[in-house]
Length: 428
Image (cartoon, rainbow, N blue to C red; front, side):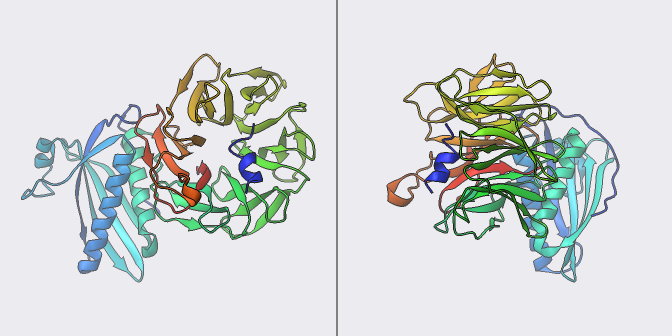
């Protein structure tokens, strides 16, 4: 039932801007606009600062391309990068240019995004940040461009939390959305799994076997402190936060069959949402906080169900051979889950609409695909897969982090991270 979770547990700066909104629509995978990227020149300093400008521009380019909203253009050899007419002739709708300087360990970046046809500034920004975090500065700029031209928030500043066993134990790690800046945030030398972000992005809840029992804890990422949320005997598995962050749905067994509970994040009191004799697990809040989707074997093999919190009514959503690990899309229309249509199929990813009328398979037997989680804009899905060629311990294929567009297209490896990775969750 709780294949991807329980079995694994048991086995182991102020800105200035011209506020112009330009509507750009389209699905992931369909670029809608072309942006010319002029060089980010060194305003002060020598080759080191110029090199930083090149790196900043490169990250911004990658972020804009990854957003799927844009194509990018490099300057035409020999042409003046400030010549908007030349950019327009080359096919650019907008041109982004920047100036970089470094002073006392701080990097400053001044940028303008201009309309190639009118010459008017669509965006003007000044950023100043510790030079060690120059990638974060580039991500902020890319997200500002996405927001300005599409009206939608960008995700270049986001992170992935996940479990990984490269140390010989399962610990919790963070990595930037683009696979860079990997860092470990626990050192429990045990089994840590199922990290879940709080809506403010400052806390992670996860399950740890540090003291022998699968306890539910909360890690404050700003201060580093750990708070025990539930150390009840048996399973204590996080599902997800309510939109306001005041409640957490979790799977608790308390020595009995696992059921779904709602936990108050202030006083840690819990109330049972299900009291079924079978196994109910993997709860996920709807974006409006009024419903909870979960997996249950109450009708035989595990299927997805939805509970209305106001009435307690439960309705069955799927009828496949196996369904697990649901995650509700931020936009509310879809629930992604891991499952299989037939008994002998490998685990794959599916999405189902909230009526249960439409089920779409996203992956098709390329390894075992599990642990899906949405990007905060609802356009991409991160998951774990054994589809890669690399082998891990005992000749088994490594379980790595992959990402796909929400329609199942364009699968790509997030990063070549040593060891096996499990249960990713995407930050706000």
